[in-house]
Length: 416
Ligand code: AMP
Ligand code: MG
Image (tube, rainbow, N blue to C red; front, side, top):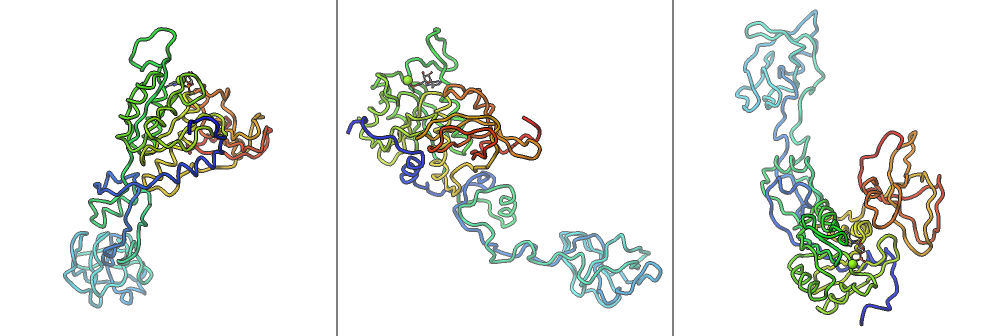
């Protein structure tokens, strides 16, 4: 079937179709630090207790509580110091009655001792230490396994690795970690009007910016962009570039998916045996968005307008890339905010309005960032969120509560 005559589908339906054809990638082993930001594919069980033994939380004296429980500044208890124990060494002696071990933070508690007196609560002379104030029984001791116990499940599979996970994995001596692979994503811009950033052109040309904004979005979600440059609005040229792009795991094209005379991307996809799943989504910006499969490769035909292209990436490509990389949280968080200015939309289309989120007198507000034309990248720069206006609405008034997809978590605290 040629690509005319199929109804527009909703954003939800389009996302469902994309994700139903998106499969999680295989695992690979990477060195510990490279696993930062990646999704772990194995469950981590503590192989031993951390800390491995009871140890001192203070510099001071390891004692038997019963010996010193009545000590006071006026009536100090005198103990004999039998050993000096820095961190990194094991105790040689048991602490007997009226004895103490001079102990440093982190050193194992010697047998016989049950409490540690802080150095600040003692004075000493020769081999004697004078206890001036008793701790509670057991005080200043970190217990074996209080961080993690052997056999405890510490990291679940499908967790995104952050710095504390790296620390924990290091403390288990894990120098290699099984994580999901990241996809390579080929990016092709199409259009006779385009020149690349370092190319000279006459005034009829515009500079290809989509390749770069898309590559940045790909990188931002942790995948690897492969830039294929520009293809003219010419079937053979587009075909050659798309064929080249099929060496990647995912392919993105921009431009050429509308109903114009020179919009060939959909035709080329069908000519090479691709299966187009949709090419019209009831949304603004971004209506002419195509998605298909060539063998099992995902191909997204994104619109040429710079904002449409980025918004469609956000709604369809980003969730698919995250799924491939093993993530379970695929969509941007949404937050409720109060709209500051009136917004007109259209029924039956889902609108994504560029807004700036910020607090006004403690209330989270969303202010539109200016002209919402699909080529106006400036209002995307100023936005830290996309307000989602559902298909049943044709306007929203200032003061109404709205849902906003959060693109950047740093909200201004002052008026905006
Ligand atoms: P198209 O979807 O091919 O009809 O493109 C729509 C409009 O988007 C074009 O008229 C250009 O102004 C703009 N455009 C298309 N491709 C790019 C690109 N790679 N970089 C920047 N702007 C583009
Ligand atoms: Mg075009």
